[in-house]
Length: 412
Image (cartoon, rainbow, N blue to C red):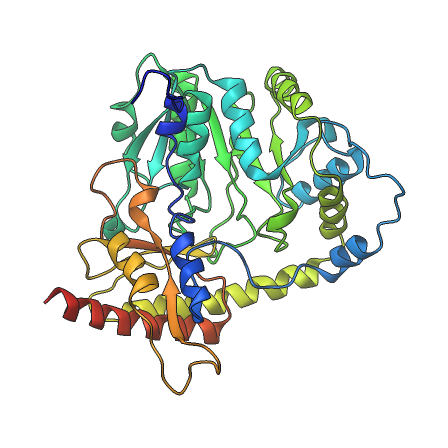
């Protein structure tokens, strides 16, 4: 590199590519060739947004699209108080800060609670962008490994305590979990609570999938855990429960006044959360109970279609997820990222079911290695999102089976 050549920041170099989106250029190229792609790689539901919310979008009557308060509109925060009360989470509007998606809530939590070099313990596999937010904040992710053989259940307390040192400042969980769909039990949540109390740690709890729990077990929020109220920061978003990913409305919730006051400095620096998004989100909260029941029932059926279908394919295995709309599946390949890339560059299936005018069909998955920090973990795994209708899920699994057959022949 020449002495006058500009250098990229170390932070930028350390920032990982998203395993969810890193294959997007290959997908764009395939689509330009006329290939139809069944996208199981990203948690973008194909279900419609509530009509009530769409009507608000269509009839915005403001003459000026102004800045909103940095903490979000009070009317939205008050509506959320009622929403959380349904889950026995008792809050005031002042304990809720509206953010630009759940992503900004995670980032602002890290920036407000952690110093550069501080460590966060996270069960892995984990939502890949946690690593990106940690890099942005100068924090360090330390992971405790969960395994597909054990259904991704929480490791023993001793595994956490092996990682705890003077730099450890927080534990981060996602419940129900992305990417595994695992749902933490009361016993597991109590173990996390005891660790937080014993070592006086922050608990960051990402609970954006609470509507999607497929078991009779009760939903246990971090906000339900007694004795760590001042340690807990809840992360939330409307993206998944109302199919509103694009409006970028999330929330950071905590009873700790000092955290809220610090978060507000970052909120003021970015001025305000999205105006139109807040109007849509507020309209989605009340009067959409029937919508939520229909969405839930649809995901129950999609889950069965995907899990049953994956486990019928020779050499494939995935445990039954109890929440969210994802699962991690093990495939009979050595390098899932190479296989996922090959599906977009080389594999193209055509038969009588191929849509007219399409060059052929393939599927898109997220290589699971990107959801692990431990080198070598997840190399033969993919994350699958059951966000397509049941017919499309069945077709995608048919294509997965055919792709695996062709890929095996290629390697022979």
